[in-house]
Amino acid sequence: MAQRCCTSWTYRSSRCFDPVRIERAKYDSRVPIATHLFTEDPNRPALVLVHGLGSAGNIWKTLIADLTAHFSVIAVDLPGHGVAEIHEGEAVDPQSLARAIVKTVSAEHNFSEMHVAGNSLGGWIALEMGAVAPEKVKSVTALAPAGLWHQVPTSKLPPSFFDARILAKISQHFMKLAYNLPPLKAIGYKKITHLWRELSFESCRDSVLAMANSKGYMPLWRGLRGRKFESHVPPEVKVSIIFGDYDLTLPEEVAQEKSVAPRHSHWVVVENCAHVIMWNYPKLTVDFIKRTALAIS
Image (cartoon, rainbow, N blue to C red; front, side, top):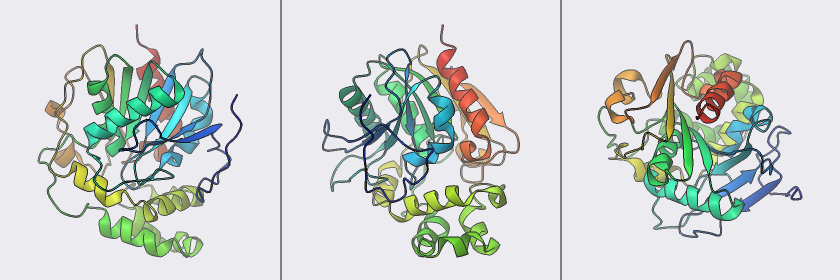
């Protein structure tokens, strides 16, 4: 077992998010991916977790304890997010990020096969991973994935720019006050989840700091702007796509086009659930991942 790695990552503060090893990618320096390894059990299949735009690997923290009972878990930080660096001019479109994650995980952790789960942009990247490396990626659990647009986004700024990005940069300096003021909390989270009142301070703090400090926020937005998921995922890669029926970030009429998704996808809609499914229902999210990954014949 590798020694626990100390890090200057100021928002890795929860005992639930405590990796045994943190790697800043050396394999592909053009697209730096940071990985957080939680278990190194050769008898357990590898599971790679991919976060969304303006987030970080610690968004999965409430799932880690349950997932490590079944998988060797690796949470990634995308370029310019969490502890991952970002370099000017590197390719950060979803397909390039998918290739970089597969290469990094394979090289740094010596996994020849892996399962993948991702949320939002991370869900799109997870689908691309199944397309670019079907010999390595055995299943994809896409939680409210981006990329399944009816019309591709073309705006220069992400829809969340003002009520998430700007607010995070301001409120990071007085988070306890902002958390305890319902109008401010609503501005930051009402579009993400209708259950925003129930979000813990820890979840809000982590997401605010991740968003406020994500240097890759605009570069990754530019990388996805004008694109949609168009890749072919072979049928041998099992795919589950899960949306909440109350997803205001990627609503059905805008971003849930089934004809864009892999034809063999198992499509699920969760009642009374919003965009960040693991915030609303962490146990159910673990169950979706397990059923997708471990039910392979």
